[in-house]
Amino acid sequence: MNLIVIRNTEAPSNVNFVVGGRSDESLTKKGIFQANELRKKLEKMNYDIIITSPVNRAVETANIVNYKKIPLIKDERIIERDPGNLLLKDRNLVNKTEWNSMEKLRTVDAAETLLALINRTNNFIEEIRKKYENKTVLIVTHNSICRALWMIKNGKGKNKEEINMYYHNSENIIIYNNY
Image (tube, rainbow, N blue to C red; front, top):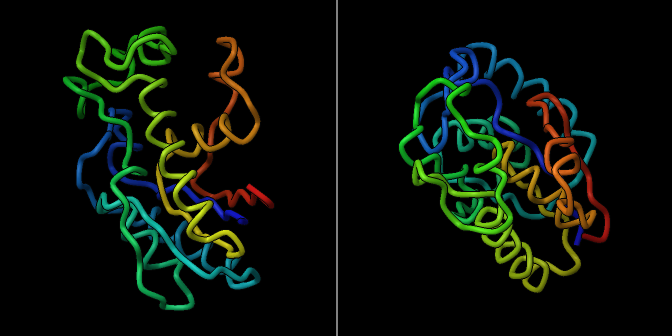
C-alpha cells in the first residue's frame, strides 16, 4: 500500500495559537488557498481511495483537494488528538512531557497522550494495509496523526528528541511507498 498524506490546511486555531483538537472549525481564507495549492500538486499524482478525519477542517481540505471527486471515507481513528481540558486554550499551557508520554494513555488534563495516539493510528494503519493492499490511499488528517504515521513507519519515538523532530506543514504532501 502506498500512502499520500496531507494535513488539514489553516484553521482559526492555527492563527490564534490555541489547541484546536477536535473543534469543528472551518478553514480560514488562507486555508482554502493552501488546499487549492495542494490540489494542484495532487493532480500530478494518482490515488484510489481518500480517507479523511471527520473534523470539519479536514473534510473541507479533503473536498478541495479531491480532484477525482471520489467519495470520502471518514474515519474516527484519524481524528485529531483529544486535548481533554485544553481544547481551545493557549498552546503554551500544554505540558509537552505529559503530552508526549509513551507510558500512559491520558494526561492530568485528560488529554490523549502520544502512546494512545500511536496505538489508535497503528490500529487504523493495520486495517487499511490489509483492506487496500495494492492501492494508493490519500489520507487527509491532522499534524498529530501525521507525526504518528511517520513514527510508526520509521520506528521513531524511542527518545524525546525523536518525538519532537517531526512537524507536518499544511503545504506539504508526504508520500510513503510500501507502507
